[in-house]
Image 1 (tube, one colour):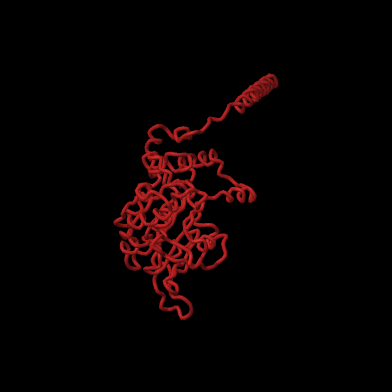
Image 2 (image 1 turned 120 degrees about the vertical axis):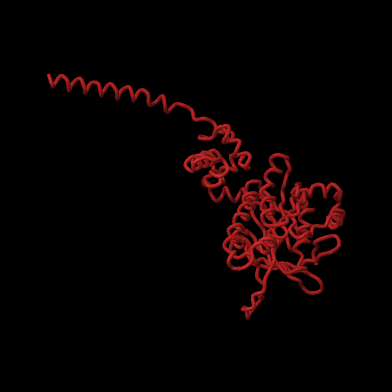
Length: 347
């Protein structure tokens, strides 16, 4: 009797296993849901999607490069859901590894904006490169702002003339932007000065929080207003951070906010293939006995986040000298150029 019961149990187990095996292939054959928008991501309903969009996370790319903490704060979701959303977005965007030869081929078509000086362009491998942050630092009168004006004009030139056929976003922290200077430079380039000025969107930042907010709004201009932004200028980067956070006691807070600001700029450069140009102030190092005692402010945060760093100084007979301090692929070197009424020119 017991033996018969065991046999019945065994046959029942075998029957269940066979049923499971029949179901499994059907489950595997089910097609994955195609993800085209934020609403299609797992764990994101209409209400959550709306919250994320209001916070600027309105594309799969913006979610793919976000951190879990940012999504938790923006969408009111759990950290586990945030990680799941980010992973799904990254899988959809195919943000994995690529071979070196593929990267080399892609870099051949990378956008570069000319400075107006052949020697300066040669120093930078063809001009200011998209996809990263380029920092120019130097004392007052070293032409940091002049270069910013020149880039704002040159961005609108055809690509065959060293331009990007795009719009410039100019964040002015020191009140140094001059439309009259843009008019001079654009006329020399054969551009309509009024149209050139229309393609430069200027915003005056009054403190570090306002400066950070303006940079965060650039993405809205690109997505919601359809602006073909190819250059973002911050002139100057550290002016407000230096004023808002004084003393060693506030240094850690300043650097934390600065790091977030730099990462936002880097995301813009990477996500939208645009050039980010920041100017920076300098300080004197009295303990330096040999060489130039001038150093950029902002510490390691600025240094590590800037893809290319250029030190500007005054040269002989009114010239300017650009010294390449740091670059991931270019050798150190110098270029000499002039600042003329028509703009940045070779000596």
